Length: 370
Image (cartoon, rainbow, N blue to C red; front, side):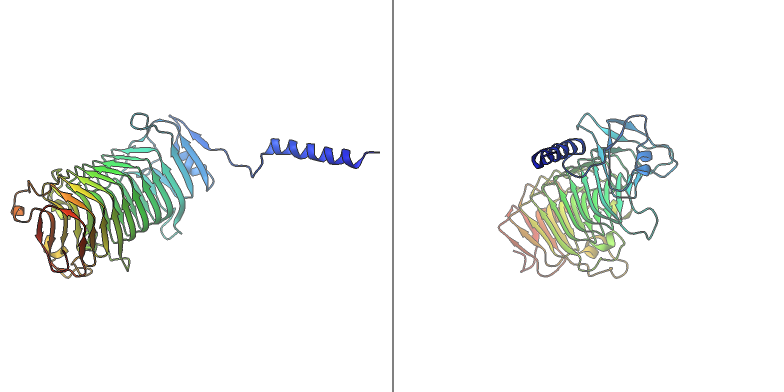
């Protein structure tokens, strides 16, 4: 007759064998691997929501007939196994493709796409946007490159709760990295250069831009009034925290003529153009030929042929502990020389304040700004 001790021992041995066979926790689906010569879009289309797709280094040109290189419409982690700067997963334009990687709902009016990670991709040479998100909630863009995509490089719009970190973007003809009509977005440790505006923010709320390196653009960081995007405000726009960025040498000649983009004069560090509730803290803004930091009334700066979407003066902004020196020493032609300075404050606004900054030269000003 089998003893109780023997039964218990057999039970323990069986449990141990099952643990080794099945693992100690819930089974995880294996990552889908895509290599050169295979279709990344095909893997995206067939992967169940929540999947992880890993892509081996190489150049990828998709031939699916769409206007995008890749399109993501579901929860997904798409990971390029890059080792920058030399080993890349590169997405290049195929026939008829204008946008590089698009993340959006499958159909207009569908719920937002949720929980998407895009990491390790180089997107190059598209005629519109490089990486374009719209109606996406809870996303991460980490360690990607946008190179010479000719509208915007990295463009989250109409989206929320995102992280944009350690990306590189250059060679756009509008903004290298533009956050538009979005909320709760963190933009951290990116490098942005060689575009009319390096980092742009419009019609958004609760945005943090921290420890970015923004250089050799026409204007480094552009914080623009809703008229600049031709969009109504979200409501309660503002709470943009611009902190610890290195904004230097933004003297890139504007490559665009015509439109609002074509009006941007070269040599600007951080431009606060008719927006409210911006906090500029601990930024280093140096060696920009026209200005380091400028606060302008939007309509005064660009002209308004009709009433602006919202009031156009900058209000309730603060400058705290910034280093703004060596700017305004070589302003562009056309009468800008009389304004050139480390800090410019022109065109009214209320509730603006400054404290504990290192500023060399100053143009304009009102009593509340000192």
